[in-house]
Image (cartoon, rainbow, N blue to C red; front, side):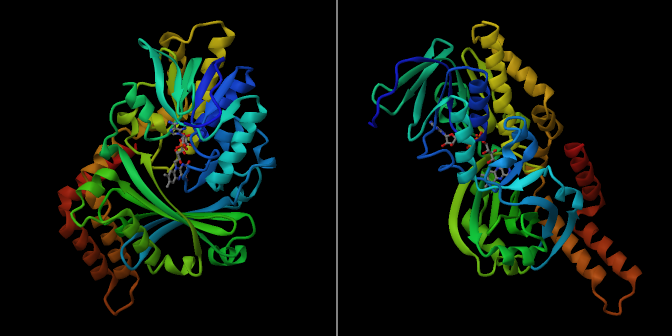
Length: 440
Ligand SMILES: Cc1cc2nc3c(=O)[nH]c(=O)nc-3n(C[C@H](O)[C@H](O)[C@H](O)COP(=O)(O)OP(=O)(O)OC[C@H]3O[C@@H](n4cnc5c(N)ncnc54)[C@H](O)[C@@H]3O)c2cc1C
């Protein structure tokens, strides 16, 4: 058991977890004058957190409007690359705009350990009590009503009118309390990433950017060996983040028993990627789950005395690689719901807290999850999007761009033939329809 003992005073709200969603909820409620206790199991906020990481300014701006003054930001993003890989090459599209070089910048790379610590300092400044190195072991229930939490400290029971669960993807607490089902392997991706350090000037030269400008590369194709997943490479100030993630169900079913680490090693050795990483010194390696089940995996989001936010609610948009902004937005909306109820003198019943779900439905969080609601099942049943098509696209590019005395009409016929041979016309039409339906 750890010291010191927990306080026996009652709080307006307890927030479990100090990631982006928990910090957003705690900050919103503390700013509204509520008595807030936030509990984080890590040594400090961010010490247990893993993220690529791209920070989306809009969501944070709504919480800390002047965050650019002192937040630990790495580079603002001016170029987005999308690469489709086979083993030796890639076909890519790049979008670079000088509009992204004009403040206020839209996206930044961040290092989560530093960022979460900074975000937590804002929560403390707003008046919340933040306790670290403390794990919430279970929710205290009075029938269907959540009345507080039990922590791993002496006298570790603390009571509050409402508990906000912001404990991340593997929400043990919600499952223990029966608020959440078991996590299904098809609804989570297992991602691994490394941070490789190198001088700032080297990054600037290799990525054709100036000081503080950054590049994002998202990748799909041979690197995941046919499993549903993607790779990514982000430029930080004096480091690069490289990672890869695939559905846990695919890792389990994978006959080759490829490990996430083996995929990352393969990605790092890809001939189009290795030169960008050369000389980088690896100082951080991490693995983490990402909730990618979309709308179908979103649990009940509120009840008597409790709310679920962020990853613990499954709020990730895997298509656009957005998670932290959904986390901050859901945390903010949960905080606003509680603060409004408190101001109106209402009890924190399910009926009162239903306003949180209504606010989420009206926001981009649920609208985007609804938009892509069919995507997870389409991708699960269509592994060829991750192996056959990337190989075909790269072969087509090679055929098209190689000058070898073969006339262009013959080349076009060859390319079309290779697609038909791999998927037949019915397969091609079916895949196009499935993709259109999933993305529309
Ligand atoms: C490899 C990877 C790359 C990613 N890249 C991006 C990206 O580029 N951009 C983006 O927007 N999103 C990205 N995401 C997703 C993003 O990280 C998450 O969506 C976001 O962190 C969710 O925030 P959260 O606060 O809900 O959960 P978390 O950040 O997981 O925070 C949960 C917190 O709760 C604490 N906790 C858990 N259980 C307990 C307990 N019982 N008691 C006390 N504390 C507890 C944890 O220690 C942790 O600090 C990425 C995720 C991964 C894994």
